Amino acid sequence: MISKAMEPLIHNNSAVRAMFEEGKQMAAKYGAENVYDFSLGNPNLHPPKEVKQAILDILDTEDPHRVHGYMSNAGFETTRQAVAENLNKRYGSHYTMENIIMVVGAASGLNILLKTILDPDDEVIVFAPFFVEYRNYVSNYYARTVVVPPSPETGFLPRMDAFEERITPKTKAVIINTPNNPTGAIYPAETLKAIGEVLDRKSKEIGHPIYLISDEPYRELVYTDQEVPFVPDYYTNTLIGYSFSKSLSLPGERIGYVVIPSESDNAKEFIEAATIANRVSGSVNAPSLMQLVIERCLDAQVDVPYYKKNAEDLYRIVTEAGFQCVRPQGAFYLWVASPVADEKEFVQAGKEEHLIMVPGSSFAGPGNVRLSFCVSNDMILRSEPAFRALGKKYFG
Ligand SMILES: Cc1ncc(COP(=O)(O)O)c(C=O)c1O
Image (cartoon, rainbow, N blue to C red; front, top):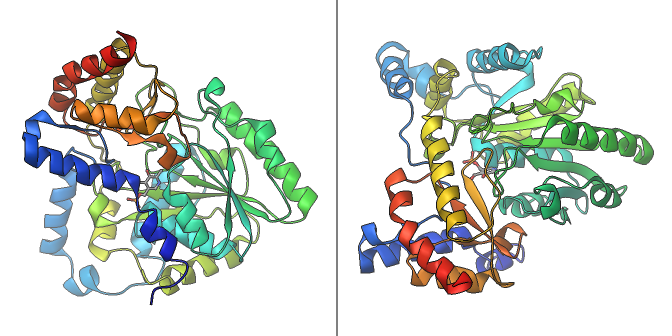
């Protein structure tokens, strides 16, 4: 017999994955070149060449006992120090290895931070639309997700009044994600400043810190001139969850880190608890070979201009077909307003044109669909007639 906690997960299995499976079936039926699958955020670009070279060098030159063995639950000291110095160089922070814990991708990093913070019935605030797994991560610790509704009028940036209203004495954390999945929005400095001010005031009022968890797997994937502000500069109790899944095209390798700044409340005890959370959650430590690889590849990058061109081409094609969407500033996604209230109907109509889109309700953003553009540019260009035909159905 399975647990009561798992039962609903079987019934609400990921819509993104379901669309991906459907895309695969359609590709088998109609030929892969005739199906335009925009479902998954699985990077299509190869990792930068430095990654392969680092793997080869490490296997050639490093002691296998070190490469494949256990290490401290927080990760290799050399890797953590290299990550700290890289952040210091880029953002003027003052981290040391003590502030860094290597983790098994952003998913694991967020779980470890939440496990460290949450007691049953605590509350975590998220801004819709949001990465759907947050709900599952929060409920792993028997806590509750509190959703701030989407605000299309602000380009999907958080509305402060709606946010503040949802803070209660049970609020322990707020999760933000910038650049954002699924909207592609980047939170500007003034938004982060406003969030920081609300959290400072409310933390004092309720008598315990509310942590701001910054989920940053898309930090480097930016398509405008605008800088992605460094969130800890705007609020002391910021915790970062970072991942190399997207920035180095390594999603299957499961490698990332969390940052717990020394200035945050009770930092020493928090770091100790989070390190233990890494162990007891079952991941024990981040993959050893990959830690050594990223230590050597912190300045490497995938071909960001490729994704920028994808973003521009898809935005042009979709808007010229008559649809309204947010111009993506970063991440991998185009957030498109459905021309009919029930976006599932729109997703269905897309399938008739062999377009695979993900319904926005799976991101708590009904009335929209998400298109992932970490796909081949060729597929994007070939999809133009399909979008045009879909547009004709709605706009004539
Ligand atoms: C916003 C967001 N957070 C976290 C993750 C999980 O990333 P990882 O592969 O590093 O676990 C993803 C993956 O798509 C994501 O989009």
